[in-house]
Length: 238
Image (cartoon, rainbow, N blue to C red; front, side, top):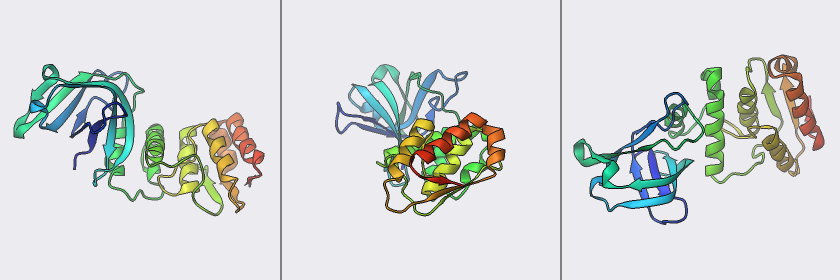
């Protein structure tokens, strides 16, 4: 099953272009330029088409979408199609100019196999925690989940080895909703998640281990803001 598919968000129902691999999309600002969609079966003989609301879907091994990125205008025309061995073709287009997201392709390659492990995000370098968090958030909303707490019991987080705010959001997402879970990616989103979760009948606490270590790493203002958000909805931090 190919890892990717280009689809029309609304304007062209039924348009779908599966392919793999993908080059140049998950790039940083220094290497971004051309994007190549490779391994497209039947593209060389396809009728020309232009889609103005194209999305890039990341697929799991069953062909279901687990992530989405906005592409915008997408042209499937002879001028940008190159035949490839085995009857497939590649399509080269200018970079979409979106937010750079290096390392996310490797994370998605693991994510699409399912069964994310507890603490798996910590195995990535701290500089990639933001990429992991973006994949978590993307997958969460692609699956149709909303800002809320889906698990039960207390939220237990350990700030002993956090190095950034991204690390905090990865940790609390997992603590609140299990491996690969999301519980906000900024203070506004965290507020929405706590507000939604506080509607549940069962009260819960946030057990924040090594909070002073977290304060040194993340800053007093951030830790204070987080605890104030919990306090607004009678979620007891301890």
